[in-house]
Image (cartoon, rainbow, N blue to C red; front, side):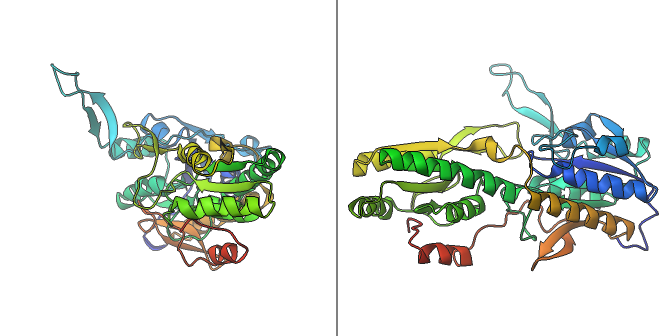
Length: 374
């Protein structure tokens, strides 16, 4: 849709979908204050697409933006289980009366009705690849939409950085620094499991920043022998500890990812987790070095956003409003080659940006003695 086909927008909606992330409130603030200064009115959709489905939409004003720049999470709430194109509306009876399967329906039309009833003419959607997939659907159905990429995993296709990522890396790095000191005290191998799903960006950056001796990421299947060798050689050289940073999606060569649980009600049902514990057990049994593990989990997603993420969030929110004012919709804000740009909403939909084996940071890590288990 171009400026020639996009009507003058007077009322917009803002929605935050998927998992929470540091910097969401900073984007909301940038969008709302920019819109209000241009004479637009703004409504916020509560709890992501679930609030859109259930018609939980409220007005947002200047007073709602006070003090939220540095606040973690999202004042609108979020939800990562509600896909308007495939929304659970019931469940068949269990055997022997039925098959127990969940019944789904497409409720995108219902969502559009809720927005029209509120006088909404366009929507700014803040989220990850799953959220952008639904945003692209709304765009194809005629609603002017602009997307803002969000995820601590930094894995959205088409943009080289997402807000929330740097805060997660800072949090993971601090935790690993702390784990190093306790590992030194007891001469242990310490394994720190970080988030990232199928992408190793958090593990790679936090691992390099903390001087991890071993970094394991999903994109490079690992073997245990190089890890054992690294730990044993460090002990022989008088090193007091070995620090291992492992992404939750890392996988041994020829093996499978460790799944913590499966949530059939979620669009992304696989919940990874447990590789840190497994590694600690394998290392201690094979080397005799006492090993411990720490799973950082959701602590990486919570808390105050870093200064850099607040700045990035503000820039992305402002650029989203520029696109909306220009009528350049059906687009997602992106950062490419260090500059703000935009891409088609369909480009990131259902895709992931992964670490390439030739990434310069992998090369730099190898140069200082880090092993990736390959």
